[in-house]
Image (cartoon, rainbow, N blue to C red):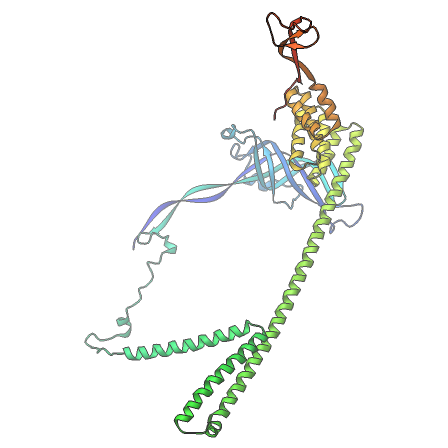
Length: 485
């Protein structure tokens, strides 16, 4: 056996340390175990998104940003959260400058100079934004080249090689059989055949007994008893026929049979009857036990399902109530024309319960009021993909936004669709921006008595008072803009 050294590629985790200014959004749930009074409350904070800027990374400045500096950096707060995810950043170096933005995961972040703002508290929850200096590291997977020693026979590493195991001696070497001893062949074919037949017969008997017992245990007690008595009657009938022929053959009477064989047979039959009844009773008890267990399990599952459904309903109702609270606040700020605060309230409402369609529709209306028509259209499209509840109003408001953007033909299509859904206001706007107009579709000869003629030469309108207009126009009424989907 020989060895040689080869090079392999191995995947390892690489840490890249990063430090910079950080702004993040967080949500927090109150920690009841630490909040001992109504005046002091402690929250478990979770950072769910953020952005890092004015940062330095280890690759660009290894003397300032490295593991030693990270270890020496003392964090003012210790987060239970092991890493910040969904962190936006600008390109990290010159090799990534073709990209506008990156999403990072900062592992084991340490923070200083925390400033919290925009705090919103609602019962046991709090939301807000904070600014700080963050120091952590990024993790990526790289391949490194490594040199190992392998066996030239099996190509396994030396630690896993089995070529060096001691050889097992042969049978002759273990028994020390002399080479000059001769053995004669012995014919054992008959013994093997007899032994095999006996084994097969025993296997058949065991198999039939197992089959009968399993079969009996799988049937109800009534079926077992009926089957047993049918088989017993058939067996007794066959047996007594055979015994009658045997007695006639040897000129013996039934008294000899009674004394020598019948008593033994009756004992065997009684034993079998007791065994069958015992098996049947066990089967009945076992079946009832299994049925009771099945019913209990189904009842427990039904109770669990009802409990889980009730819990989900309560959790959903809590979310709806919290979302409605922020929606009510948004309506109050909207009436006071505080549109920025209205948007913040609506975002909080949708964050808690994304399917709050009233809040989503209200957000579109606020964006339209702030003249952000493109963003408003995007919100209305998002709402129309979720529900048909505000379909008529969505078409109308999208049409109004498109009119403000100068896209009149597209606006007419949206307002027309709203009018088709019997929106009275949409019908009025549609009649105003897409009225009926007259257009000439041809000319006829107009007689003086008001009738028309298709003749163009002499004799035209001769019986109708003569020709008053040789080219009287024919008008048709149509919409100014054709609606196309």
